Image (cartoon, rainbow, N blue to C red; front, top):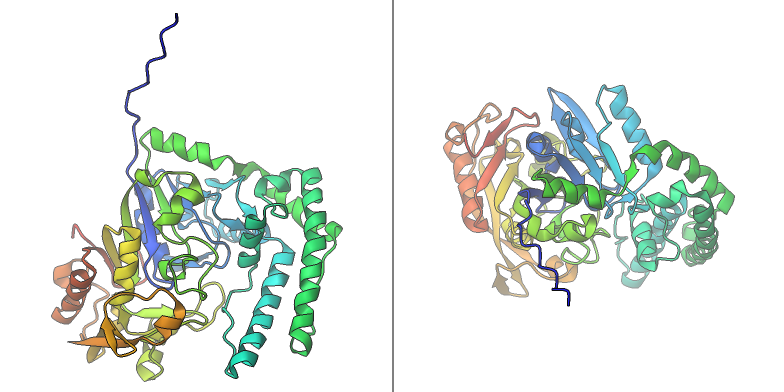
Length: 459
């Protein structure tokens, strides 16, 4: 009788992977943080979102705006991986690649998962039309102004919906197989066209020109050439990443959007369509959460939000205008002015808890210099009850009134600070309050947009 095989007990080497995630409503400065630490890793991995995200990185005074490509593309010799959890608009991706190459950036390290789903033209048409219908429906029901979700109309939500619907979903690997692609596109066009006609009817006179139908030939003529251009980059990234980690080569996971826009844990329904937190990395890449040893939570020194949804500390006054202009608070993807508010530590502490954050990156601290007083939200009053817990949905958060702690401001220019001891007392007190309330140390403090304008924990 043959003896049973002995289990293989040799421990597999594992790399200490790191995640960089936003702790607010996006635009926190994740791109700069990734750019700073990318040289320490074998590759940078995007695991969620699509072209609705926008990361800005400034290198030697030159600004780069990235939407689909991981910020690590600016680190020479590193892999930049778009994993399966991302929805890819191939036209936007090629345009972004071309723009980087024209500026002398080496893009040879970019790899795209063959499992990543594709944003097609009909997704964008549906996205725009749904926003129009929703705006009219909400306004008609409440008698108030439009309260549509406020999407970027890049087709992200409809693409993720198709992913869940399965039969009509198109993945990157399908772009390389025209026969299989056509079968999916024919089915999808039949369903999508009926949906668009129904939504257009619901919108009525409010949107006579919004939304259109598509033919399979039109979609094929658009998709196949784009797939051919990207063919050399489309690979099985799941095995690739596991091989890197098993060889002791660490990966850096770059989240798009931010924790408070997470489809499950954010301010629903004013959220994005993907899992934006560290919790989304396993499903969005195929790498188990146990491989992630460090989570860096990126936060602004104040609050911002784009689009609709509650922002308890919003400043609709000259102070808010001043912060917006000094911080250049305009969307990287849309150019829309961001709403601005005082720092909300109830929200940040909640997000840090969700993500298991091990260190903070406090960004744009320099934007607050010159203000006499700084208010920080440390609790909410909701229906007359004070709480330090972040509510479960947008309706409750909309009723929240901030409870502030006021600190003295700092008038000094801090853009040349390179150690914590270089910070003036007011700025240092502000950082220490954040650390104490969130319960996580600041490993990085940004005092300007450039790489060099950064205080590291070791400094």
